[in-house]
Image (cartoon, rainbow, N blue to C red; front, side, top):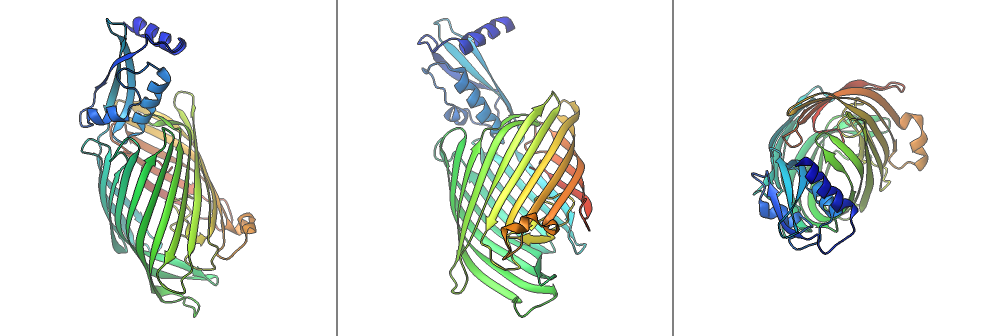
Length: 419
């Protein structure tokens, strides 16, 4: 049977397009919660279309990107009439995922984020989630994202958030702590041009509120700020990644641009843009080389509230929680991941990494990127614990060690790969 199937697949791959190679039916197997009608709506092949292995393989890559799919494969069988039945096999993820992040702040406060997200609501790849955060202060958020709500190409996203944190503010070679609150409501339209290219356009209305808590003060830095704002955003993504359980290969680029304007006179408009480049390559049977480069610039205002932070959980592992800010950023993260143990649903993966970055000072020059005091270099090692049948069930622990002058070191915990 295997030889017969291999012969059929080779015939499909190497033969030219022929009117005899017609699809009789597309059948879905293995899915339980995912709706068959939804999966068929995403497929590019239909009953009566010409059999094309390239299109089928693209469908499989698309399915493997869904949060609800752990793995996908296909089979082709001839019918007695001379056409072909195509079977898409689905291995589903468990998609109702609780989350718990625990960490400490610079003030030695115990902090945590507790959340629950369903990534396959109604069996149609709809994400509905919420979280509660205690990081000195209380925060919460609600999120809804349905990329295929209206069609194979058109979807919608909505979010509601009240995020409150104790933020360091840097000025005149000193610092203070402010209670920062951001209350926002956002709505976005999602459009998929084709298999690899997507666009998101959205609008947010939000209020930023800063209140002085402790530390140094300055006549030039207000003790309180409360500013209502509007945000327009665009996200363009090129994604050619291919997934095979814990392994990833391919290239992805995501460009983000935001324009912020205020309804209050005297508050300047603001823009921020950044691009993340990802490159993944399989190394042998058990290795994976992963890379991320982030390039970003924002309005170069001389303000202690600059948007790009230097942070453990965002860009440089081991550096600490929000130790500095800037109006421009260059960050390179590279790591080698290697599967140390794999059995059934469980995977243990080790990794060695180097995180490096530099920032432009608020109101500074592009030459700030080359100044040694703005550069961070942190090599390190880590472990990953995978559950192969639960979406994003990756517990990670990394230890980063700074090699520059007066550098720090430390552990970073989290859920999901760092990038």
